[in-house]
Amino acid sequence: MTLTPDAPLLFFDSGVGGLSVLGPTLKLLPNAPIVYAADSAGYPYGKRSEAEIASRVPALLGRLVERFHPRLAVIACNTASTIALEHVRSALDLPVVGTVPAIKPAAEMSRTRVIGVLGTQATVRQPYVDELAARFAADCTIIRHGSPELVELAEAKLGGDIIDFDAVRAAAQPLFDAPDGDRIDTIVLACTHFPLLDDELTAAFPGITYIDGGPGIARRIAYLTRDQAWPRETQPGLMLFTSPVRHPSLATLTGYGIGEVKTL
Image (tube, rainbow, N blue to C red; front, side, top):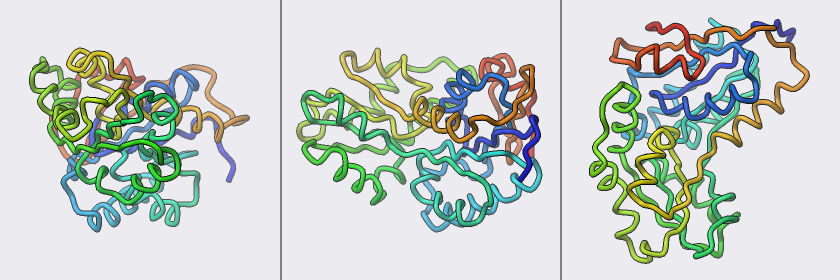
């Protein structure tokens, strides 16, 4: 396939969480054309069944690829990646980058060997998390918690709401209330929404190291598109929603390279 310089990177999530992946990607590839699709009609994925996600995500991404002809697709959602990544790769004839919980770097950093995994309810129960823990953190205690509340709080923050500090603390507190939870020194943010609450989480639980996959995914995207041609100047990106919803202001989205918002 011959790529033109204006062939975009396609980012996909159920909401705005994928902005935590888009941000570090644009630091490495500042002139990359961007199409960001938020499946607001299916949001939140964390409360949907595995079967529904496995069928919905490939179908929607297929429509987006047909319309925008991207050079690469990024499933910037841990839930969709852990459930539907292989389905998407089988369906699409282009590179697809997924998002997985950053358990390996967390294990490399943890001193107490007790690691928290904070994600959606769907992500934290996936066998893939067990496989990552067995491969990279066999000597660690892994404590998981699925928090739909943090997803809602991240969406609200990007929408311009003032976030209640106590609500953030209450949403993550079950990690620390679990057996050995008082020994957690590292938390994997296994939902792309959660890095958007990094300041609030750090204030709520000081002394904890938070790790997310955004920078690593950005490096992977840069590697897969190495030597490809890009526009000479930065172009405003396009953000699409699959249903009419309240979305972040353009003033907020401009910080992530987005210059236009539409409903798909």
